[in-house]
Image 1 (cartoon, one colour):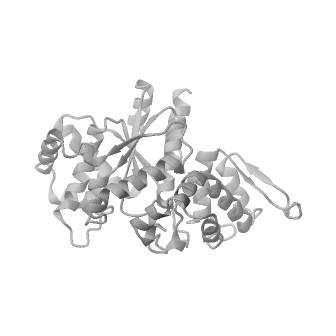
Image 2: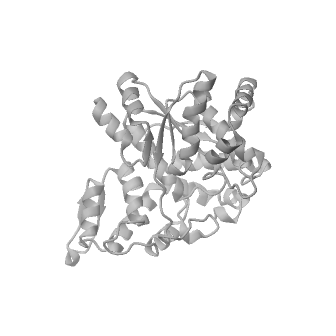
Image 3: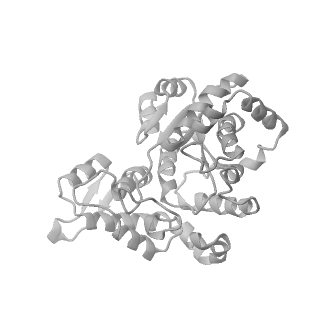
Length: 337
């Protein structure tokens, strides 16, 4: 794959890249590129995580080595969204969902935050950065990621540690949601202060909740999201009841699932329809699907039925695992069931 096509694949379906020039230079000059995506273990593995994982499939197809960072310590630092004594079992759960939930060509390398974040050198670098980062800057970086209701000191350390992780994970790219922009920008500012290289930061858009505009995706409200281990019946029900007005693409979660998950993973989508409604349709590019939908030549129900079928098929392995090990979900709590 040439530089132009590789860069295009890495860049597609992104909200922002810091910076595009640095990415192009990286692709031109380095063959063996490594990227990582970090996840906090603060709740069930739901559709909010699907978008970055669709992007990681693109990275893999572009020949990039993938590292998944299970940020266990960060999960507690964020106002104890994950209690300290639950970090291990939640981290194990996330790792299993990631291993089985997506069709990797090669299982990604997993790293756990507590594996390096207690090392002496890491701690010294972290302390150094606390002397170089103002409270105002740390609060700005953390503002869209951590709870920040009554800010704890831990929530201000959170973005400093995330910045430092890029060096200790030995990566060239960090992938995060657009809500993490201030943290990713901070990383580019502070790592050079320690003599470390700044990385390329790639951000994905945030997917809408299934209820559409103004409806928050919540782990405590099952109908607002999909978990990778949800039953076939629950996936079909939630997709069937999802916001998807005919001809409307803005904040449409069904089209977003097609664009950011199904196309990167499957490479196409085939809409199965009765002949009296025009017969089957196959799309190899998302733009083709979107145009047909805008023109109202594809009914939302037909699209929903196929998206349900794709997700049911895609998550078969992880669903079957937790059907056999339901006790593991019960131990994690009712939000995981």
